[in-house]
Length: 149
Image 1 (cartoon, rainbow, N blue to C red):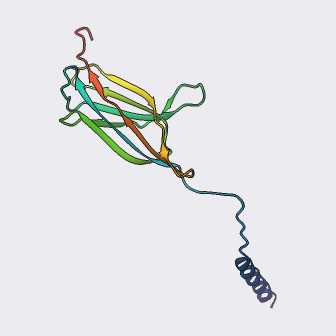
Image 2 (image 1 turned 180 degrees about the vertical axis):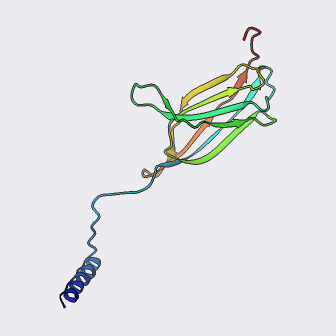
Image 3 (image 1 turned 90 degrees about the vertical axis):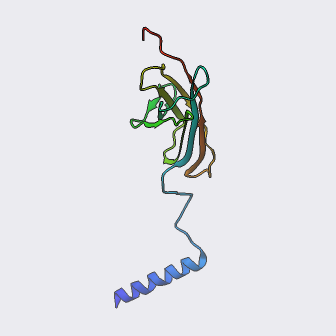
């Protein structure tokens, strides 16, 4: 009998709260993970502006803490240029990071490596978990290695 009375009171309270629009939610709590879309593209040519095929392009992202040096994630992404010397990568990812590094290597050893370390700004986010779109465009001109390298 006592259980029936308590169950009836709980049901009545739930109905009243629902009718009155009472919410136990205070403030804005959101569960999930920050994410963004990111695109990087570019070309790799020699000094005569000829496209270089099968050039390794290593992409790595990271973050800075104040004046500390950049901390890079442990898992770089490796791409290779196509016959036109172009590379492209587009993805959606979790925990988007502003610091971006591209290292371009000729695995045959003919051309010297090159790299950039830059910051990407994400735009168009929803001010919640979606940080927006980030884009990195980089073109590289590789010179031949010197004879003493």
